[in-house]
Image 1 (tube, one colour):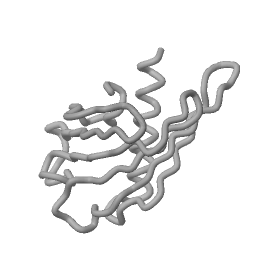
Image 2 (tube, rainbow, N blue to C red):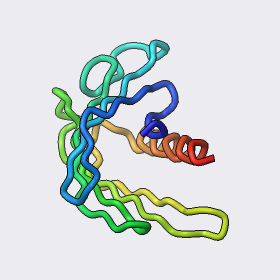
Image 3 (cartoon, rainbow, N blue to C red):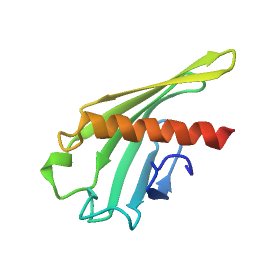
Image 4 (cartoon, rainbow, N blue to C red):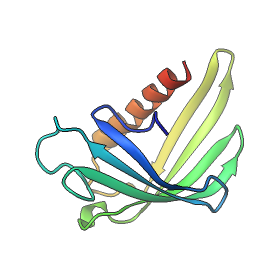
Amino acid sequence: MAWLPPESMTGRVLDYDFREGGRYRIELTYDEAASGDVGKTTGRTDVSAGRFLSLEPGKRIVQSVVFESPDAAFAGEMVMTWSFEPLPAGTRITITAENVPPGISQADHDAGLRASLENLARYLG
């Protein structure tokens, strides 16, 4: 998952079982340039736990995501669907997110997802 963390963050996979019903935990750490306590879990980290709800190879991945946070603004189970559409020059990826915690602004969420997709494109070359 080298491509997942947005710029100014590093990631670490704590647990990963990529199968339908499988679970994962990921820790993202903000770099030193970030000011203040910006993390959801601690001042500098976001830890999320997820579960793969549905895997349709080449078509879509549906996963639930819960942020480990003492702040109620980040509570709740978000459901993300990654859909894949083959194109002549690659693949179109569409991400939909439901039940995004209120502590995550739409602008920040969109920017983070866009950065991850840009990283993925660079990673795949």
